[in-house]
Amino acid sequence: MTLRFPNISRNYDSTRHCICFWGHDSAKEVSFQLDEGAIHHISRFADRDEASMLHVFDVNRARIEAAASAAYLKQRKSFYRLSAADL
Image (tube, rainbow, N blue to C red; front, side, top):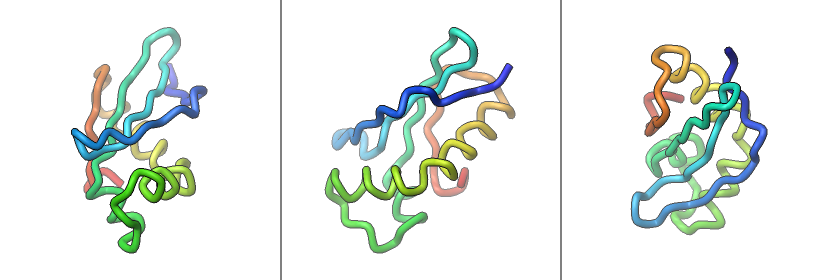
């Protein structure tokens, strides 16, 4: 089965300091959190406000989804927290 990202929704969680997004493997939903460090790894000039974080995510969505898919292929779980090392 293949992990897909049909839902383009994402949100910034200021409590957990991450961006949350979701993928699907058939009917199974897989949750992901991309930590702030990963966002700054992608764009070290990104501000730490919600709009800036989400903009970096959106511009780099393909790269982030590829990293999420790679993590999922290694071990199929329902939740992942991705860091700069995963990108």
